[in-house]
Length: 122
Image (cartoon, rainbow, N blue to C red):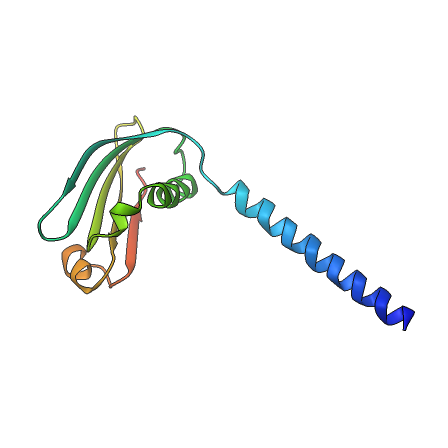
């Protein structure tokens, strides 16, 4: 009985430690920086357009992390049929993001419904 209890406790400890490790890995992928929405328009057809000036985006991974952060902090942009975003990080080329939130958004963006596309500037 003591052996079974010890094995159970050891198993729970391993699961708890693995879960903590996963959180640390997830947090390291999070974006931190500042951004400003410089242009914002909601079209009658259900399309959101936004131009955003951002810092601390220097890779495709940081761009994707920024986009997730932006959408979490600004849920109104996911309420339309589609979202088109131009992302200015201060360089010569701008990155872009588009998302189709439903079938109508799919027709507007050329994507499948509930899909998105990110283009990181070279």
